[in-house]
Length: 221
Image (cartoon, rainbow, N blue to C red; front, side):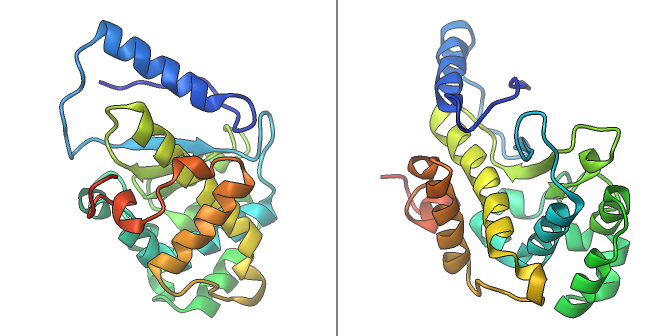
């Protein structure tokens, strides 16, 4: 089953709307079966009726590429190698040419003259972990996170929504593109930055304290 939410605002009761959906879902339908081939997608924008600037998109894109391996460690195993959410650097001809060199990646991303050019750097198709298809000027302007797990309740729905929004906020705050840098050098350090961003956004309560709970290598407590 596929469900699509209305546009939600992180400052306007979004979590209550998720609770209401799952309450109605349980009242009307049987709970969906567990299915590792399924996943969740979160579209993130700068705000309601707002678009990321090209400079912001470049900062986000750089963070997505240089922290790709660390982000994969934060995901469940069955989302790390999925045909519908491939790591961007593995599914982009242009990023493959950079071969992981941060200076080359930064120069390539910084040189994108339009959102469409940046999209073409980030992916060959939309089946990537972070999809830039919608940043084109005639589209919604969102960056889509496709790496979330299949959802069967409100706790993990809010968890992966908070993760996607906070990651993008963290990339903008860290702004590593400014110096071709790398502020976090482990998955735990990156997750700390994501949790800090979530706290700033008022979403901190929805992220677990431990990486192992997030990626489900540890049981929830």
